Length: 104
Image (cartoon, rainbow, N blue to C red; front, side, top):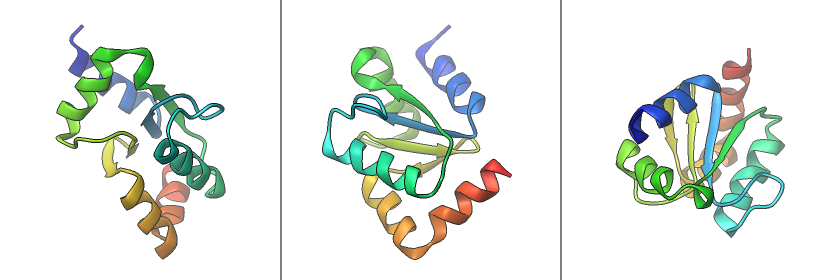
């Protein structure tokens, strides 16, 4: 299975999937930590992939989304954005709606 196929499988297996540095319990960068805090504030149940644990995924997710940075958030298989975009959506109240819709 190619790295792109693995990523696609991960994204469709969880309604909300976060690619991050570290884990939700132990983020390894400030941007990943902030994104986790925002998702938790929204009450999101989400999957997470630690890109530091898998160099193939770390580069592969950047190629998959054509987005150069980590973290990356996907909701219902759709790329939402990185920390800055997530923060902006949260401040506008839009991320909360997206999370609620995804979780039904």
